[in-house]
Image (tube, rainbow, N blue to C red; front, side, top):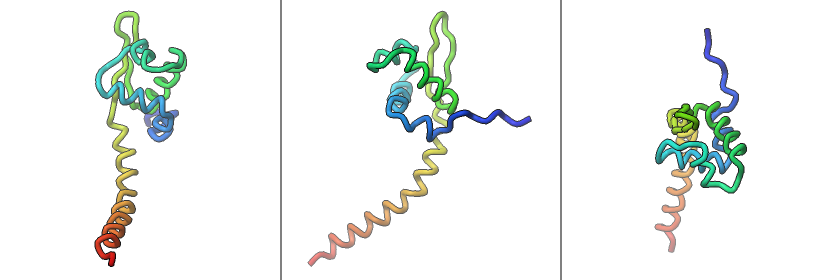
Length: 107
């Protein structure tokens, strides 16, 4: 049997600035939904929706602790993003090399 397809991929998940900030918060430590919500001016329900998308993209994992749900970062899917970005780095390196050459060879 094959694994079920994810509803959201890494690129969709990180497209939103709120979700990127949530990931940054979770990179420091595991947090409860209420702790995450305290960093934003949006509702707990909105944060829960963002966490759902991040969970579907397998970027975060939630677990029940008593009456609260705590979330932690799962950074492994970010390697897909890093690989995609590294392909385009060579274009930036090429442009920077040309700029350096032009600056050094100005008369």
